[in-house]
Length: 161
Image (cartoon, rainbow, N blue to C red; front, top):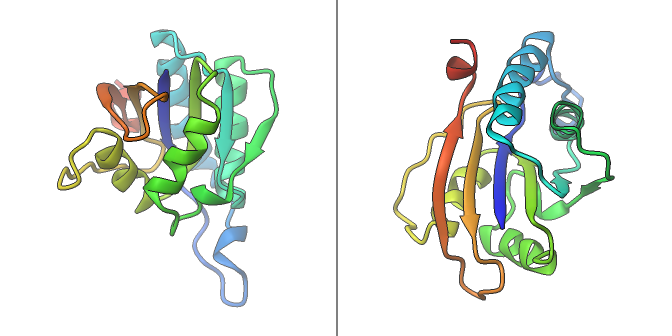
């Protein structure tokens, strides 16, 4: 299975009295994200399922990814993808959908970098997931313990070249 880890784009600053989960993407965030998704489309990325954190900025990111990648299915909200989620819980969600050919997960830090290390079987691995970064890891989702192979990573700087 192709597993795509996508960090949300640049979001609005936190506003006093408003929950963090309500922050939306900025115009710059949308633009950089679209560039990364354009490059992802060029690699042949075509997830069969999109799962997203329920936070506004993550759902907006997932919708942009769906449009850019030609995904026609529903975007499923997954509470395990909030910033304080557990890599183990996310892996359980992936395994529940192991019949899919590719899953794109839209989420936040610090979860995504921890998830990458977990799926690659190297808990001490440090992965810098910049905003709008997209990572592809090929996994065997039939296994209880994740076993993944890093295929590539795209970041906005690369997308602008």
